[in-house]
Length: 218
Ligand code: ADP
Image (tube, rainbow, N blue to C red):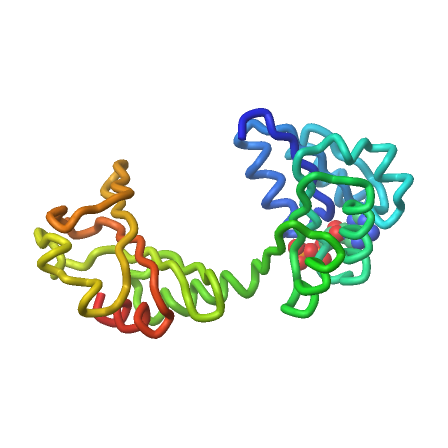
């Protein structure tokens, strides 16, 4: 959303990457870390850089954390600090808290103490890489629920010039083509007669077992 302001707590590799990307897109970003050196290293990728311990409620109050639309808790190894920070942010009434989890259990606790969204960067990247290794045409893979996912699959040569009807992907594999990316254009409601070109990207949704079959065939 235009004009959104962000605060990122924890300038490890993940937090710094989130902050830098937001800053490059022109958003207001405040970064917080308890480590002075980390703050000095990241002063140029943020609108404000503040040294503070995020488990100290008073310190968060002083930096006006409540005024930010989204606060990202990117504290990695120190699970206790990540949980306590999330809890304090929730109690302070922060509108949107996104927290990074080290593992499933940590993620569950983060939701319990008030995170609106929990991300698992290592798990998700590992999942993507594994799918991409099995089939290099799989560009992205996002788990929706335990058994259902969305995959972005580059159309192989054998699909070139064929319509969705001819390919009959739903009947053959049980997966649904939700959208087709072709160069810069995006067809978000593909019809049966739409044809695929090699290199188009199909965004498909389905059961993991069916997606696996589709990926192997692609
Ligand atoms: P990554 O795995 O993304 O590299 P790290 O765990 O290495 O993450 O980095 C987390 C960062 O969070 C470190 O720079 C650390 O100084 C900072 N950090 C940890 N605890 C707190 C805290 N209570 N308040 C502020 N920053 C913290």
